[in-house]
Length: 209
Ligand SMILES: Nc1ncnc2c1ncn2[C@@H]1O[C@H](COP(=O)(O)OP(=O)(O)OP(=O)(O)O)[C@@H](O)[C@H]1O
Image (cartoon, rainbow, N blue to C red):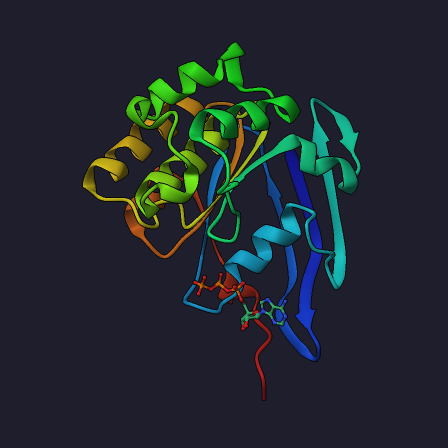
């Protein structure tokens, strides 16, 4: 997916979080959205995902030269973010089956195959509620990486992962990002090191005099 932002701005009340952001995110590129806590990385990600309306400027989305309306973007993206919840009352297998009723996985992958890729075969019948925070993060990441979508959004992707989990993340990011438009909102160098482009949100902050 190509995302073109022209003069993009977002404010909450009277406070501008960023302003005058003009940038093109290209298919096959991975971009890190960087900045200190509270800079507006997650807000920018949500505006680009068309989850939140911008306060100024325009966004244009295209997939294979076809224009995509903002309300259609949700079905073209895969997202892993701390504010996105799994369904605690389902088992892992039920969660993946539920997800694939609405969104297919890449390359015809089945929920059972994804459970193997997640290395969570022993937990397939366990309730998500009883998963550790690192196990939940691995499921959220696996669903985002392996959902068939041209836009992949990762917000603080290695949250709660141990060393083995971070290694799993690197292996599966490398296997799934080719050809997609990837945005990573992060403060942790090792989770966005693979990104070829960097966008510092504070470059678009509104200075107060
Ligand atoms: N719905 C909202 N209403 C009002 N202010 C908001 C809202 N969402 C975010 N903000 C404010 O916007 C600013 C940017 O927040 P955001 O979460 O985008 O930052 P961030 O760079 O992702 O931070 P972190 O690194 O801590 O995750 C913060 O000052 C935050 O309080």
